[in-house]
Length: 115
Image (tube, rainbow, N blue to C red):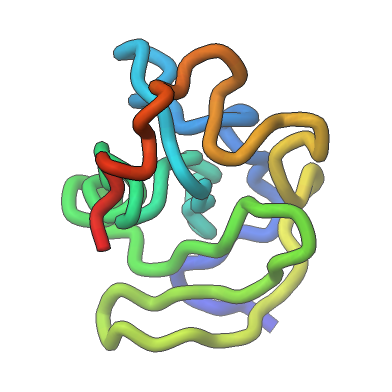
């Protein structure tokens, strides 16, 4: 079954938020674009790059890139859904800290979260 906006064969773009890594930033939780594999940070993170990716690309579906989470989010209707298993890996490495990346998170990180 084909679902518009989901490409199960596309691997994730990396193990952390692409924009945060490029800019020396950090994230709270990670999200994966179900269409192109882009890894961005969640809306609680300072950069909110997963939502920015949707706005720039128009790719409507993302999934969690956190260990043990398998939900999808549809930006078009702000709803969660179930969906197919995407290409491995399913999450960032289990030894990667949350928030991350290791060594890149300020001591007062909790004061910078969007709530």
